[in-house]
Image (cartoon, rainbow, N blue to C red; front, top):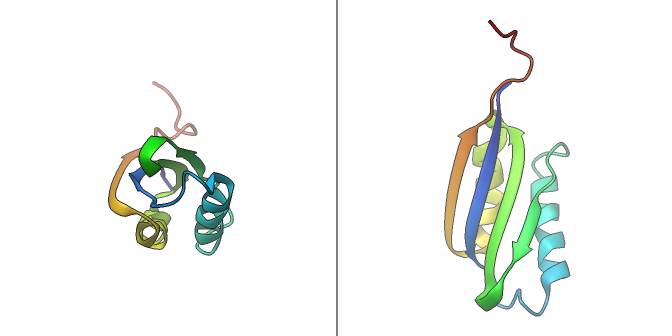
Length: 89
């Protein structure tokens, strides 16, 4: 199954004061979909949030739907990663 790198950006109102709690909420939401993806959550100024996750392509829609309600103005981009198991040549 091909892997994708998802990047989800948006604003998490109030997250600046509760960064650890918001990051844990994101991990809990993703964990409800799959236990094989580990999101990297970065919170910047003015509640700007960037979440990066590498996961199986078949799960990207479900993970996106799980995280979108946590953010204002969510933007999701994804890119298929090269399959490392393919022989070269």
